[in-house]
Structure formats: C-alpha cells, structure tokens
Image 1: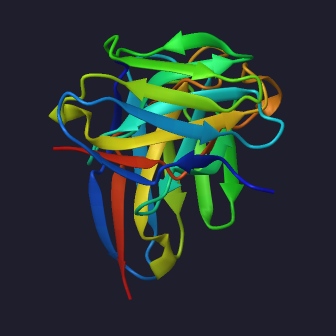
Image 2 (image 1 turned 30 degrees about the horizontal axis):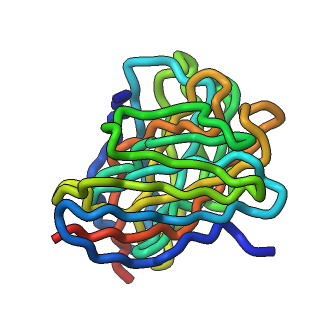
Length: 116
Length: 112
C-alpha cells in the first residue's frame, strides 16, 4: 500500500509568486495535516483538514490556504511568496480526527520549496 | 507557538554506545511521540506514549512519558551506524491528532 504521497518533490519559485503543493493521504485516511519545516527546526503545524473541513490552523498568515477534496487529497496554497517561505512542506494523514484508540499520524516525504 | 525544549542539540558517539535524549515542555501533553527523520524524508514514527509514567520499548529504543506529563526521554541502546539521523520529540494536546508540537531535534552521528 502506498504511503502519504506529495508532489512535486522539489520546487523553485521567485518572490511574489504563488505555489500549490499537493498531497494524497494513505488510502482510507480522512484527515490531512500540513506542516512547514524550516532548515534546522522541527515541523510546525499549518493546517488540519478532516472530511473536507478545516479543523485547525497554526500561526501562519492568510497567504497560506488549503483545501481538501472529496477523495480526501489536499492542496496547500501559498500566495505572494517570501524568501522566508523556503522550507520543506510536509503532509501527514490519519484515519480519524481525534487521537482516540491510539491512532497514529503518518508523514509524506515532503515538498522542498526554494524561494529566490 | 508551543515550544518543546529538546536536548542535546547534537550527539557524536561511537558505534555500540548508548544514547539518551530528552524533551521538556512548560505545558501538559496527552501524548508524547518520538520520530526519526532521514535527509530528504519525512519523519517516521518510532514510539508513541499515551499515559503518564508509561515506559515503552521498540527494539533497541526505549521511551518514557514523564509523570508530570511535561517531559519525555528516548534511549537508544548499542547504537549502530544506521541510527544516524535527526530525532524529534512531539507532543499532542487535547484530542486533536493532526496537530503536533515538535522539538527542534537531536542530530545523532554514529562513528563506526
């Protein structure tokens, strides 16, 4: 079975541009979360979507947005890119929204975004 | 955002040695998790801890959920070269599984 898949794996953009990152969760998983990992830091939570609704948002500006589709895949959009947006963007999925029954969160390999 | 203090920041050890790293927080967490991340990859779950005081092993790895619910440690026994990587602690508050708070990581280097 495929794990969490993200595309593209690498991306180079210039300041001011916008970018769309894509994520396909593990089959059967309905919850998708997005994280930003700046070099040398741990991942930082951006969004969580469950059943196509936003269920949580981290401390990120409105330039960041996301959505989840009926097949539970998700897109992360970032507008007006800044140099500081350069990071590894990670997608994670789980089968349910809450942490009951010892559910676990599985991460994809990420999209490395470089903003020049 | 929520800060998890993870230490040490880096470790250089010889193959066969034991390793210990820990994580502390100013807030209570309901779940503590330990992940390993290799270059160019996403974090991979090593151990999950769900109850205060819980001690859990996964092969040569052992982790504990602190009694105060504000700390956790990870031990690796008899290290091998493939243990090289960055180890992250992460905490979950409430019941929201998808929202984790991560430490800054411990970079482990193992010399043969």
